Amino acid sequence: MLEVRGLDVRYGRTHAVRSVDLDLAEGEIVTVLGANGAGKTSLLRALQGAVRAADGSIRFAGEDLTHASPADRVRRGMMLVPEGRQIFVSMTVHENLMMGAYLRSDGDWMRDLKEVYDRFPNLAERRDMKASVLSGGEQQMLAIGRALVSRPRLIMLDEPSLGLSPLFVNNLFELIRELNRGGISILLVEQNTAMALETASRGYVLELGRVVLADTAEALAGDPALAAAYLGGH
Ligand code: ATP
Image (cartoon, rainbow, N blue to C red; front, side, top):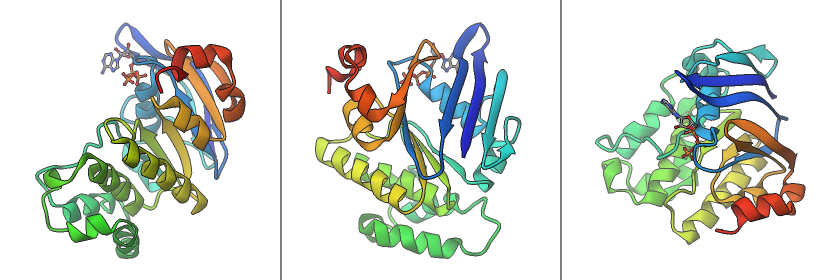
């Protein structure tokens, strides 16, 4: 479904993503791991269209989207839940969710909005409150809920567990599996390597912008080099 070939991202002299190849089949959960600064966020921002690919190609659902606008990518079903949630704290929960419907051209988004409220009763109860009153866990739900209102086929999550309490981290990973069972493909960037590898079927490890390992999640979880580098802290 997603086919990335030779992708390069540059910021002036910084070469943040270097010739990355990545595949994700429909229905898969794929994780991208790597230390701070490895290029994970830059990769996702290039897939979202917020930064330009300096080289390489991005195909999604049979179409070449390398030069497509971010809005076009959302319309085709690619949705990013950015690092730090990026919700609008001075707007209400409901207004934030409505932003997810912004690019929908069909009239069906009301149904998706209702599904989000059914799935997250906490959000329904706080519908008319400012998003700033939500806890970190609820803000992450809101960011994911907003993405769901756009009816994505692929959700790209950038470090969704960052700053959440252990209990909510478990809930979050359960939610990711549930969304996937419902038919949504997932590209998951995570610092919580152990949880990410338990949840994904395959993973890529980035170092200085390059893919240095690509394998099944099981093989990566048992890789001594990866364990030494990333699994120790979790
Ligand atoms: P983190 O987990 O800390 O977000 P990351 O793996 O997502 O790290 P990126 O944020 O993609 O890594 O950063 C990759 C490299 O690109 C780093 O060297 C970073 O300093 C640089 N970089 C990221 N964004 C910019 C930018 N807007 N302008 C210049 N350099 C940038």
